Amino acid sequence: MGLADLHVLIPVLAAAGEKSKTAFYIAGGVLAAWAVIVSLVGVTRPGFPFGPPGELAVIAVSVLLVALTITMAVVTASKPPKTNEAQAKSPALPIPPPPGVQPASGAQAPPGAQPPPSGGAPALTLAADPSGQLAFDKKSLTAKAGAVKIDFTNDSPVPHNVTIQQGSKNVTATATVSQSKTSVTAQLKPGTYTFFCSVDAHRQAGMVGTLTVG
Image (cartoon, rainbow, N blue to C red; front, side, top):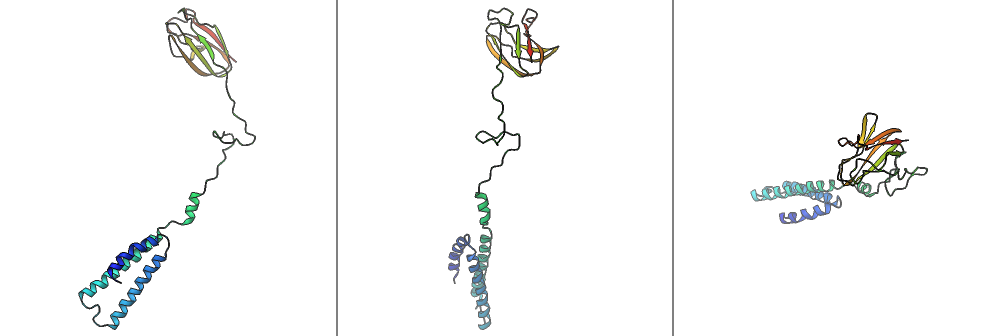
């Protein structure tokens, strides 16, 4: 076997080694056979390997065979097990949501689960006098406890807002607008509240009313 043959054989066996360990066994067998042949020739023929050129040839072939065997060992050992591939390809089973958690959109709810409440109380509507007079169109509003939304319309050029107050504490307020609309939502407990415009002295001028939450 010449050096040129070994150079050609290495990539072929490496490619085969990626599929099985046969190439590793072949490379190991060739290396062992080479060692036996060198030993026998060295014993039976005095003067072997016949000068410096022969020594270089023996050393080169030995190094190539050792490198080939090591390469096959590395290539065949790096192949991932098929069981891991099967586990990676198998689909994961769905995990049911814990009790009390609503499933995502498109999923079926577990038997006996109650759907979440839909909809809600309509928003309260309030408007300022469109002519610019300091007055609201309502003096009283009524809402259920919870999230209370107020839609405020001010078509006049005079700036106004709606401020909600309970006792002396301001709970929430809309933005101050003119010739525009705005809204505000607040969590309100049962009780009596006051709504008014906090701009300048508009409250004192009559822009005030009562909000009853029950």
